[in-house]
Amino acid sequence: MKNVKPLILLFSVFVAGTATSQIQNAFPDKKTRILFLLDASGSMVAEMGKTNRWAVSVTLISRMVDSLRFVENCEVGLRVFGHGKPITMRDCYDTKLEVFFAPNNHKSFITKLRQVKPLGFTSITQSLLATAKDFPADKNSRNVIILITDGIEECPGDPCAVSQELQRKGIVLQPFIIGLGTDGEKFKQTYSCAGRYFNAQTEDEFKKIIGVIVSQTLNNTSVQFNLLDNQNQPRESDVPITVYDAFSGQVMENVVHTMNGKGIPDTLYLDPMRKYDIVIHTLPNVVKRNIELQPGRHNVLPFETPMGSLALKVGGITKYGRLQAIVRQNGKMETLFAQDFQTTKKYLTGKYDLELLTLPRIFIPGVEILQNKTYTVEIPAPGQLQLTLGRDVIASVFVVKENKMEWVTDIDGTRTSQFIAMQPGEYKAVYRAKSETRTLYSKTTDFKITTGSNTVLTL
Image (cartoon, rainbow, N blue to C red; front, side):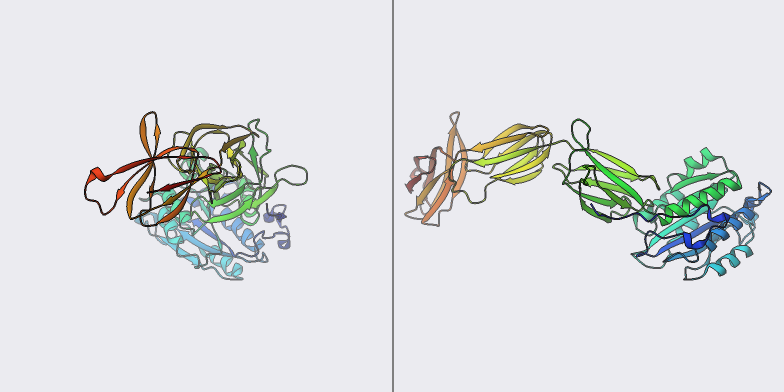
């Protein structure tokens, strides 16, 4: 996998006055835009510690924004709701982008934030909808929303549906939601579907949560993919892996699973702000969806991938060109893989049905692939039918099995000379001249194919 070193985010708790130069961005090649979506409804003046929720929010957000001044490739913006109309008006569209994204706007951000006064109604759905136009058009940016509120939606709408749609369209990463002085369990049930939820009952909890959010926003997270054998040991490797954003479907990483020098699965670093769909490209694929990483921790993701091998061989000297077998999972019609003969391929342990594209075709049901074992299918070398046509004919070849005629192939009646590789056995050619208009002029000729020999047949 990629040999990428994590960039550690160093800060004690920035709100306590840590130097801004200690905060680093693990994604310097991408613009990180952080939009604060702040509740300024009337309830924000409720008591929190020695002051109120609004005053605490203004103080901590101001310190956070100030600490981000010198972080490389990071911009901030501010949208406020519930501050334009009194609560008696119940205005569900009372939301406004107060500070646009721009370089070095931290001072104006803090000035504007301190001018806002809590006044009105909680309108989260409409505010989330509006954020879609707050972020500049930039497909390479990391757009982050930090929603800070002390209330549940008071207007019609579904914040979770809006958040998920914004993520599906790739407009934003998974939002953060901070509930202030609220019923934590009730808020968690309401908002966990919209993003990563935190509950802050006190000012100290609020401080710690903001520190965690800064870390998760600007740092990456290590991931180890354990490909497990049938003893639940991570011994499988050398398999391609694709990592998708679970909401947008965008491919985030394409890697080949690798063991490091100590025989341990190597580490990959991913953005913890996303949820992921992981596809392990075994045969068949192993897929896990909506994987949420634990930020700041080494994440070990197990996948059950015990594998054995299937070897396909043709004995002797073959006159086949490219001969393949269609491999299907036992009892299923969907083609899993078309494997060439004279090759060995790994499959997940289990039963498979094989259709060998010989003439005639050979069906082998219920082939069982076992852990670290190779199941070998070997067929005899074909013989060759050397066919000469005296005139344009309509002809087919059949084999007799259990006293029944089974079709093998049609013959191109327009070619006077042709060679067809066929498995050893006894066959019948059924034909008539194309110019004949009566069925009774049909003929049947028996012939035999022997390994490594030419059988000459004239029709």
